[in-house]
Length: 78
Length: 476
Image (tube, each protein chain N blue to C red):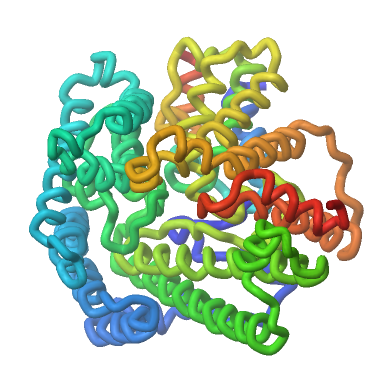
């Protein structure tokens, strides 16, 4: 499956657990816009680390860089 | 988890599921009435909205008129919002506290000095982003402040007649978490100007030690982009203030009924009697603890709803700080719903740095250590560092000793959060009683008991709180 779709599925599942049924676009602000709180961000970090092998410990973590689906895809493709 | 939404994408403030289940609302969703939203975009509508808000707000705060004037400026000049937030914040910081302060000039001087220091910290971070400080600004700020507290508590400043050192430190502690948020928000690739940043240093809509909301980057995302959004956000602010007022009225009636009619003593008195080895009957202690727990929840809701309501009136669609905490079904969920912005602070400044420093080979251990760092160490540091007056008067070690019950509280809370987060739970049973009421009751019962240790009045050692707890269960 394409990585972007995998991330989208993960985020949609996260939103469903939060009973947030609103759609989101590729450039919708998720963290700074308040739809993902800090605990959700941890879930997202773990998902990206285990699924795509992203090493945030060595690369540094800035919440702005995970704010949109497009930004997340850019990180895993970097 | 908290289920709050933003007006920028949806006007709903309540989950969709609940809107179907609860057709009746104590406070109607006025932000969804198209004609009202249109009216609130006109000058007469804005005047009415601000007047109604001001009349309700005046019940809470003597600064109602200056606040409404600031909100009016922000409503009528939205294109200058960032600058006006700064102007309003400076008015509230420098001009309004002059009534009732013994040395207003000295106080204003301290504020100006600290604001200048904060701006310098932010400017340095922007100027040298690749320096050691530029790469770890929040960590260095927090570590530096810890060292500073230790240093000033060991030096006898009164000998050198340098009381100003303490005065400035006490003022600065009120700003530290605001600065920390601004510093990490400057991580954005293209840092903006200082307009909103200066206004966020204890913003005029209400400042506690915990910033409401969390950071200027977030504020920029949630600000109204057009007149319609502004009207909707302001109506949500008015609605939240009305909700806050209802809770306040209920809280006062609750107090009157419990303490006046039922004559349940204050928790402080019950604890005091226990400390003097003349405890009240066990059922009275239970009653005073339960009443205190609910008072604390309602008091927190009134205050935080009021702050967020003012923030929304300023044009920022901030999430609520407290959201139905008594319906939480896990310990972690309660912590998230009870004080959302404080939890965000702990996660941002303590959880993430520890979490990211560890190897991902042991994910559960990694999570546990990071939760402990935030809920125990960060939580303790946050509360201890703001008690500079106590440290000044009693000395560092005596102050640490007086915090032993609170340190115990944070340790137990951290363990509970770790267990809540890591245990493999089965799906909750269906049905209101087993699926909702029982788990919610268990969580509230846990936090109610933990409240015994969360009183930060430094009067009693841990043994007194433990004795009180034992007496609740017929021990001792």
